[in-house]
Length: 338
Image 1: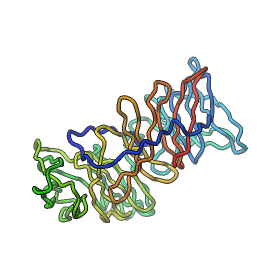
Image 2: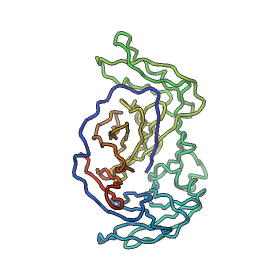
Image 3: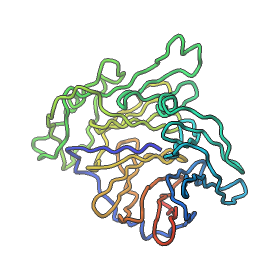
Image 4: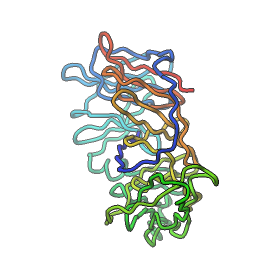
């Protein structure tokens, strides 16, 4: 899963939040463990947890018959579970990473030192039929051909960067001062194949809200990019520019829209089963969940009251999963999202 936290100076004031409380939905407890839960993932629609009891580490999982099992794990200080762009499951430690396969038992597929894992596995953002997409320094996406002969001939098919010559934000202003010329909001580097595209007005004709372009501090680096594979397309969310770009599996830009109503502080979460992208934003008392649509609109899913015992939220196959420390031990629970 990708867990990314962004902080913006200005936000759009649009986008209504539903007050539907997810706390009122029936909770399903999947497991209660007396050992310490280090991390968990939902892999192939099944719960996998990394736990520790004393100085020993264990993998919690369900076998093919549904039996719930714990199996010991020999790894130097494992710190988390991660799913790569090809849906492989890894246990990551302080100096190495181990790919595991789970059936009726846990088997090791390969072991990698951490530097190799970071360079070859963590950088992969999407895996298409003929290409894969890697991230570089968090602000550049590179399409690479999978076929060796193609890679030798042309190792880079497409490079994606989003630049702002000056950082711009949007704020409300009165309709009489309406300015719909948004072509100057974003400047792209010469290698970006959509640098001549024009951003569409995020507000419909006749809307009571209009936009003012506010110039901020000059930037010298590209915007941070978060990438998510959705079927045969790549969704890219540009951090400072607050836009959603959709690319094909070959690297061609299909659309570019502004995301309306981004919260002040949020992280991105992708449903590994449905590939939908969600925004989770937390204030002093609640966590709000919104789904990102291709047109840039945000659909409100609901809110979860913030508490010390609910943490580590994940979304998979239409369910919200969380850790709950109420009572003895620690549980992993889920609620069905509407």
